[in-house]
Image (cartoon, rainbow, N blue to C red; front, side, top):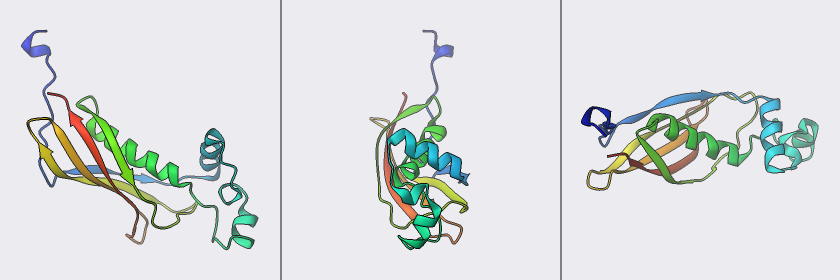
Amino acid sequence: MALSEKQIPMSVQVGDTLPERELTPDNVQLFLYNAALWNAHRIHFDEPYAREVEGYPGLVIAGPMLGDWLNQCVEEWLGDNGRLVSIEYSNRAASYIGETLVSGGSVIEVDPASGAVRIDVFIRNAAGEVVTPGVATAVLDT
């Protein structure tokens, strides 16, 4: 491969932030996501049940969907410049259909020798509360 054809690695520093993404799922997206996972918990598709039996204010967004959004946030930031190798997250509060959520993150550690990057990732609600914090590790192409 000629030098001009080599991929130039991303210039990444501690404190760099990932572009934030706004997410406003609807009933159809939530239903299809849970159907693909074979998740038949009624709080994700039966609004009267979610409200009257479980006491939620509306349909609950599935926790794994939030984790997938964190993955997407990192993958979009990396583009073709690296790969996501691990992610850990925790759902700390329920989120509901109709809410607009924001995903994002910031670089907390860079290892130039290996190309490894650790990233604090999050999903926060409109009130600014982080409902899903996590940490992702990516490896940049060299």
